[in-house]
Amino acid sequence: MAEYIKKKYTKEEAVRVDKAKLEAVAEIEKKSKATKTTEEATAAIKAVDGKRPVDTTKNIYFDSGVDTSTQQGLTDLGIYLPIETTSQEEIQRIIETIEVAPATPVVNFNLSYDVELIPVPDKNKIYSLTSVESSIWDKPIYKESDDEAGRFEEVHVLNNFISGGGGAFKISVSGSTNTRFELGIFNQTDNKWYNWNEVSSVRTSSSGGVYMSTESGSFNLGRTYYEGVIPDAGREIVNVSIPPASHETVYRIGFLRSGVIKPNAYFTADTNYAGLLPLFDEVEKPGYVPTYKLTQLMRSSTTIKLEEGSLGSGTGDITIKHAPGALLSSINKTKGKYSVNLNINSRKQIHLSDAISGGILDTTHLVLDDPAITTEVLSIDLVASVNSEGVGNVTGTITLGKASLRHCEVKLHTSSIFLTDQDK
Image 1 (spheres, helix red, strand yellow):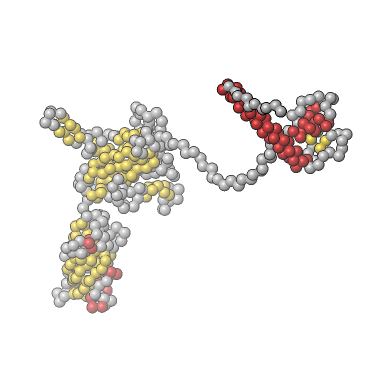
Image 2 (image 1 turned 180 degrees about the vertical axis):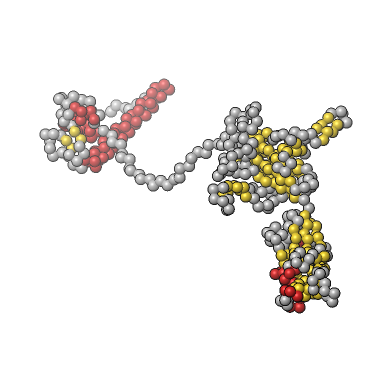
């Protein structure tokens, strides 16, 4: 028996042997994978076309529509052999070795979504005109007259105001970044415009430098205005200082349309005020927005007196001075209660009305010209009488609430309290 002798390899030969072993293993795995692929392809084809064709003359799979009888049919299958020299058995073997990719299942999606437009940044647009402090001006409206159809007019109810002493205020103008605007304040009473460039004070520093302040401004003849540009923050704050006044003064606040009011306008495009903000020099027609109205009121007063009439004038009137709209009932000293002692000395003989039991008066004996603009009367504790000398007298207290904005009178209806012999 021949003896088996284990061969010894050099290092290089050992590497080649290992490589050959690996290639052999890879070839075996490839053949195994090909066999498996063939089995899977056959199963896939059977799953698609059901069963083999029964019409062998046409060589068409009826269920799947696969054509193997024409050159185009073979080309569609990825077979590029000539149809004249290729047997159907060979075609079948090729088809059975084609690797069939698994079909992708159909997935239905139910989508629910909202389409949103990408916002386009505004340009050259002003959004609002407000005061930083609590409201100091009113916004009149432009509407059709209640008295005359077709005639439009400005309607204004005084709700906001500033005192006669004036003061410093801040106006806020908001808009899109880099929008230019022109703001004007017109003293309608004195026909003057606010000038932001007026020097209000000059100060010299210890080093000799001169500093000028224009913050307070002033009102002058001739149109002037504030030129501003909206910063990145979205709003510009404009300082205004209204000077003290000796009489009731009305100011109008609004914008000036660029390129129209001043002849040398540097604006490259008109500023858009959206048709909602006040503009000077606009045509008054439906849709017109009046300029805002700032009213400067003087210190007010309320007078309590007997109404003048056929019996003559009374005496003893009392006048209460107060700030416009002050809440008199909250004043610590009086709590809104004031003593009354009114008299009337008529040349006619007068008597106390029989309708007044015990001479006690109530609020029905008051005369208020317009309750909406007259100082509020909370209660009265008044007694009327006629003394032995024929002098009529009303005495007691009257309690007042919210004061009027302007001077007003609270009167007692004399002719319903005191009567003459002819009235009886």
